[in-house]
Length: 116
Image (cartoon, rainbow, N blue to C red; front, side, top):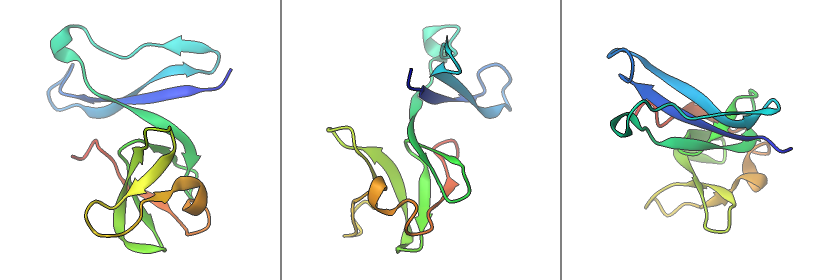
């Protein structure tokens, strides 16, 4: 079975100062559920793209990516058809499909939605 992984930000859920990721989904042959003790505790989850950057870091939806192709940071997003791409907002650049650039242009995860 194909892995279907997500990460969920845990910020102040159990300990006010805590700021980390909980990984959940179908992987390693079992299902691990997202964390939420009450509806108020629910946090957004971000999907694993199935890609890794040049250093082997898993790339998730919402990550900030730096590539030698462009001097600006792109954000990982998913198109309605399911393709992953880098969005550069209103900069007039891209979007670029991951398959086309991730390995070819020395791309690296430099930030995530945990910081935002």
